[in-house]
Image 1 (tube, one colour):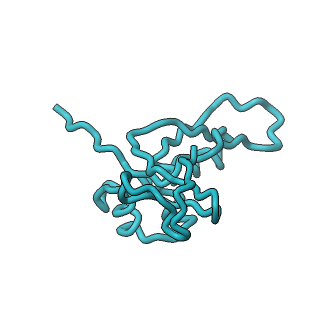
Image 2: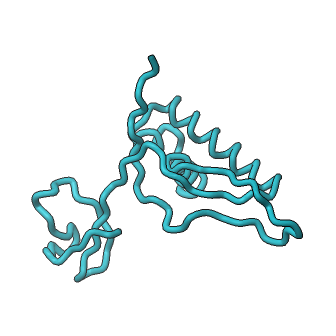
Image 3: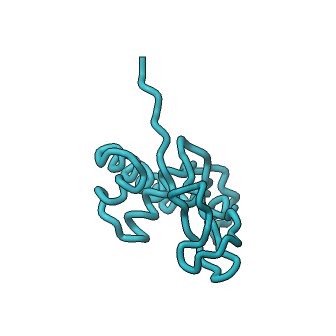
Length: 131
């Protein structure tokens, strides 16, 4: 019996649904599905320039598991580029970090203590949960 997948920790889900190729003369019916943990792995390594070990820690997975996720998403992106396929973001086994925004100083932050809710910069209690 296979072990159940542990949820991966992601900082923020993408705020868009995917990408469509431009300039195709025919309608492309194929789609490449990228789940949120793959999106996060690509973002951490290729956009934010973390090492795989650092990114694995941020996602709360082992480094070998992170490497498998990262290789999978890179193959999918390459396939979409070469074949002119649409990229669609789809669920996955993830837990999203809760981000808050301060109404006073307009910064985004996470809370380590959910009971003591105030802005870490200006100490304002006027904070809202980002959606």
